[in-house]
Image 1 (cartoon, rainbow, N blue to C red):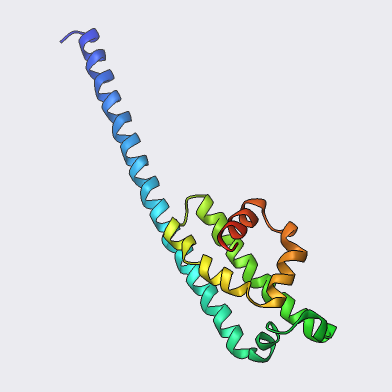
Image 2: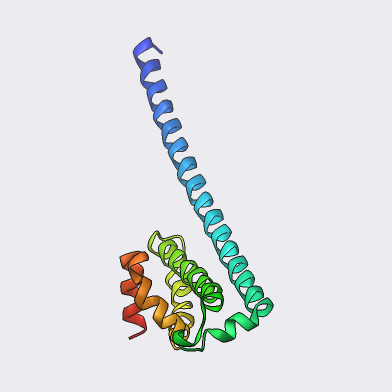
Length: 148
């Protein structure tokens, strides 16, 4: 075997090495994405669990959500509005993760009935009317389309 044949043989081996490396990187990226999605799903479940615990612990505040805004003083309105903001921020984050492809459509769709049910409460609806400009426009569009 002369040197030109040896060089050609090394080039072929090098090409296969590069291809093997690309396949490995692709598999690694796929695995990393799966791990990221599982982590996000767990974080989402933890956030929901925490919101439910807050609702139980502060049930007196959550009962105020059903009241008209005019009937609340500032000492009542502020904690209720903060709770509403926390819930809506959670849903906005979920929508963002869905748009990024990190949560699937089924996961986002499972939030829609909860959001629409929340809008039945006067304070939630009022918060939305006053503050929707503080949320991402794609989230506002999705919520308003779903909760007409």
